[in-house]
Amino acid sequence: MAVIAHKCPNIQITIVDINDEKIKAWNSDNLPVYEPGLKEIVEECRGKNLFFSTDMDSAIQEADIIFISVNTPTKTYGYGAGKSADLRFVESCARRIGEVAQSDKIIVEKSTLPVRTAESIRDILEVTSNNCQFQVLSNPEFLAEGTAIQDLENPDRVLIGGEQTPEGLQAIETLVSVYAHWVPREKIITTNLWSSELSKLTANAFLAQRISSINAISSLCEATDADITEVAKAIGSDTRIGNRFLNSSVGFGGSCFQKDILNLVYLCESYGLNEVARYWEQVVLMNDHQKHRFSRKMVSTLFNTIADKKIAIFGFAFKKDTNDTRESPAIAVCQDLLDEQAELAIYDPKVQAHQIYKDLNISDPEAEAITLCNDPYEAAKDAHAIAILTEWDAFKDLDYAKIYASMKKPAFLFDGRNIVDLEGLRAIGFDAFGIGKPNPKRNNMIVS
Ligand code: UGA
Image (cartoon, rainbow, N blue to C red; front, side, top):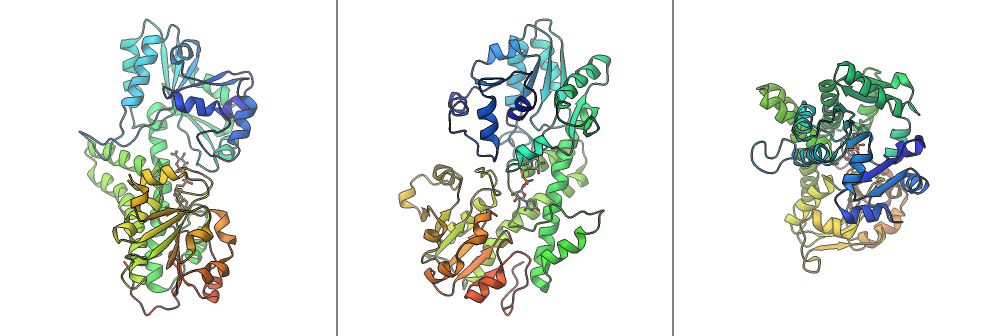
C-alpha cells in the first residue's frame, strides 16, 4: 500500500487495523517491519496520501476500493487442522464491510486464500449489506520479503481476477488503472477469479518445490562428493529450467511456502484428489527432512554428542534482509540442538530477543541454555561449532581467523546457506561443512 501511495499521489490510501499498537508503530519512527527501502517511502507519503488509523468504519465508508490484507494462518483446530487456511479474519472483515458500507465498493482479496473464497466473501457481503453493490476481485501479492520494494516497483506481473460479467470486468479495469500508474499494461494479467486465486497457491508451490528438489539432490551430493553449486549451475543453464531459486539451503522458511502448500494439499483432498495432495505434501516433508538432517549432521560430526557444548548460531531470520522469523529453519534447528542439550549463543543482526524467545518457547531466558549475543564474535567465543542459518551478507566477510582462534578445537562450522568459502576456512583450521558439498575428510558417515 505504501508503494501504491508513492506511485499514485492522486489516490488516498488509509491502512486500518484493529491493533492499536501496530498502528501507533506505523505512525512512529520505528516501523514494526524491517524491509529495505520501506521506511523512506512511508516517511515520504505518510500524512500526504498515506494514513494509518484504527478508525475502521470511517475508512470503510470513505473507500471506493478495499483491500482485505489480513492474515490467513494455517488452521490449528477442527476440520482441516494443520493444513487448511483459517479464514475467520477474512470473514470478519467481509461482515464488517457489509454492515458498515453505505455505497458500492470494489473488494480486493490481497490475502492468500483457498480457491473460491471470493464466493464466500460475496455471499457474506450480500446478506450483511444495506443494498450496496460489491464486486470482489482477487489480486494476489507476489513480492518476496527483503526485496519487497523492488518487487513491487518492478513486478514480473500483476495478477487481477474478477467475475467475467460487465460489472466484474469494469471493476477489473478500475484496479488495472491503479497499477497502470507504473506497471506496463502487458505485465498486468487479468483472469477469472478462480484462476487468480489458484495461481497464487501454485506459484508458491512451484517455488518451494524447486527448493525441495535442489535440497533433495543436496543429500545425494553429500553422499557422492558431487557439489550442489556445480549441479545447480549445470542444470540452471538450461533456459527451460532457469538459474534462479536453485540455492540449496538448510530449508525454506517464511510465512507462506509451507502454509500455502498445506492449503493446496487440503484443497486437493477436499476435492478427492489424493494423489495430487500427496505429490505436493512431499515438498513440505522434504523441507522438514532437510532441517532435521542439518541438525543430525551437526550432532554426528561433533562426536555424537553436543550436550553442554556451546554452539554459535549465526542468523535466525528466515532469510536475509528481514527481521521475520516465521517458519524460519533456524527455529527447527535450534530446537533440535536444545533437545540434545547444547548451549546456544545466537546472533542475528535484525531479529529482536523477545521474538527468538517466543519462537523457541522460552519463558525464563535466565534458566535456559540460550544466550543472545550482540555480535558474531561474542557468539563464537569458546564455541565448539558455528551454524550459519541465515545468509546475511555480513557473515561472508567476518574475520574467521580471529573467530577460529577464539573457539574450542576442533572448531566446526556448518554453513546452512553455502555463503562462506569452505576451502578458505579449512585453510584456517576449521572443520567446515556446507549443504550438498563434498567432504574432504569423508571417512565419516553419511547422514541421510
Ligand atoms: C515467497 C515468494 O517468493 C513470493 O513470490 C510470495 O509473494 C511470498 O512468498 C508470499 O506468498 O508472500 P518470501 O517467503 O518472502 O516470498 O521469500 P523467498 O525469497 O521466496 O524465500 C522463502 C524461503 O526459501 C527462505 O527461507 C529462503 O531462504 C529460501 N530459499 C529461497 C532457498 O532456500 N533457496 C532459494 O534458492 C531461494
